[in-house]
Amino acid sequence: MSSSNEAIKTPPLGKEELVDLAHSLRRPRTLFNFILTSIVTILTLIALFPLFSVLYMLIVRGVNVFPSSVEQILRAFPEIVEYRVTITKQGSLDALSVEIEDRLSDADRVVRELQIRLGLKVDVRCVPLGSLPRFEGKGRRFHDQRLANYQI
Image (cartoon, rainbow, N blue to C red; front, side, top):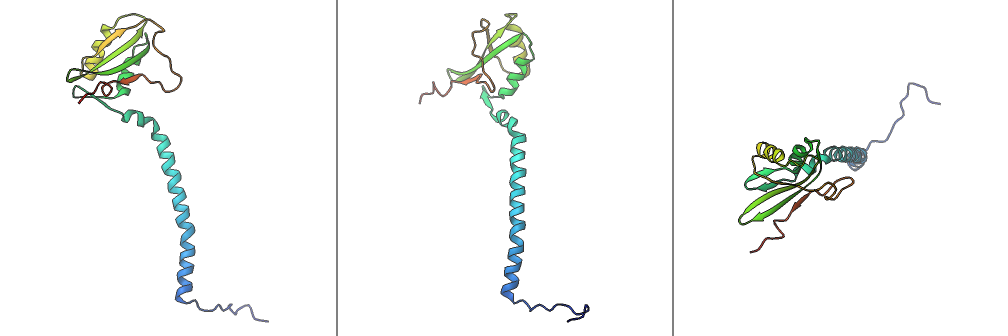
């Protein structure tokens, strides 16, 4: 029997054994860091997902127009039920036109607000209620027809 004061002797480790031990201790930490980094990245992308639609920017007559900006302006009018925005090429210039379903049938106030807030003259037409398509979830309210009419 050995006394309690005696330490258990282990054989000394060589250089190769130490490298293997260090590598095996590092591997779980690396895997843990990879998993943790992946989770944080995924959660960040999920949190920023609403911004991706904002990143889509139109350039109309040299003015940067974000679809979210147009939507925010139009949604400020509670009388506007639905809208559709169309970007077309008129000659060498781009044009922005908006069709709105407005309970008041007054497009002039919307034209003024869009011109003030965007710095761009926009053609606004009132259409009958129920004539524009309805969307569940994310709607396709912006139609860019510039490339369809593009000719070289």
